Image (cartoon, rainbow, N blue to C red; front, side, top):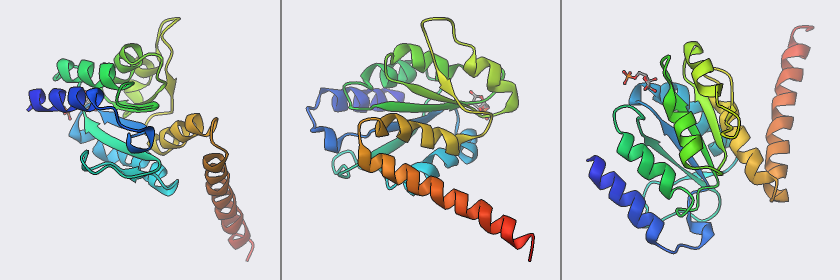
Length: 190
Ligand code: RP5
């Protein structure tokens, strides 16, 4: 139930876990119908060596992320609990995706969890203005509609400002992508 999840977030916030055992990135989305689009954020983090937290009693060591469905409109209490406990649970970046013309989860979370950076993912083209349209003083970082893989990379970029090893993982992944383009280009001339 929503109450159970609120309690989970609150009890995790009250635990004094060492930072290696807390999720670094939180992925949230407004509906399970967003799962396919948001899979890219999961994939980018996995490509960078992040582990997914599934059991909070047995958290992975090293960089990790978690995924939750949290709706601004259908479960506002859960959104509040998630955003307001995020800092105490050790989250450093939140990726938030929502669709529809009123895609409020990313920007409400950016405001409630401030100053934790939020990378917004408009799940559909019509959600772009709603996600990026934040007033002065309440910023959000956002990717283009559906580009959730980029959101995963962006989240890792925030973390890599303080970690050379993670920065190198990002460079390596970028280099792999460059090689992929070069391979396709070469094939066109064979
Ligand atoms: C938004 O409304 C969700 O993020 C989703 O993209 C959209 C439609 O949700 P469902 O009606 O499919 O659950 O809140």
